[in-house]
Length: 117
Length: 114
Image 1: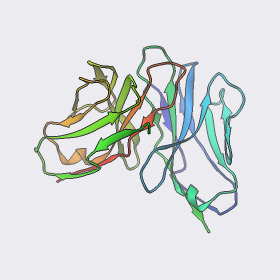
Image 2: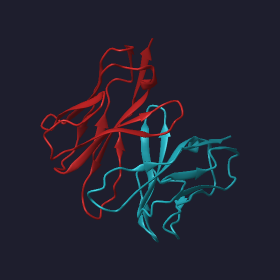
Image 3: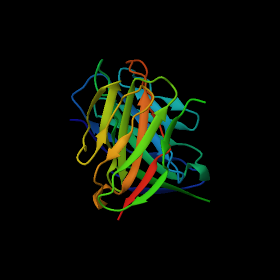
Image 4: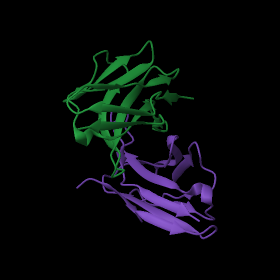
């Protein structure tokens, strides 16, 4: 079974600074996807960024980027130029890719990020 | 607008009173799933459905039932709710194709069982 570990229950950062959230996972699969989801106080689950395991290039979405280390099974999220609206719970998630399988997302326990003015 | 809807958004009920949380998607997705979110535990899958009339247990199915009679709807049924089912529930959907990897989440249902 896959497991996802987020070792930082809470983090804080000053506005405009950079912060990195860590995530490690354990799997025997070779094809899979990794995701970071954001959950603001509204509780909506918002996809921030995704990474395909077969791609070596790290994904980037505007101020959000990942450091994907497949051999180390590490998938950290870097937020640059932090904004007050980035305050949220962030979840790392894993999904294996197999035809006909359950496309279950396995989530970490989350990291609560607070951006301070 | 493509979306997943859930009703109700908030529900307070008493132990043992049967309830149903509805989930509907308008994207013609084959795959639908229910998760519950609890503090310190992240989201855990309750049940999933690969298509109409095809459902299976996730990681925490005890105390729940589901049905998939139509492609767009995937209700979550609690026959006899208990306080340990107090949680935030999310429905999600996606197409049943390998190259489509994003799941679309509903807005969540906050359930309190007293």
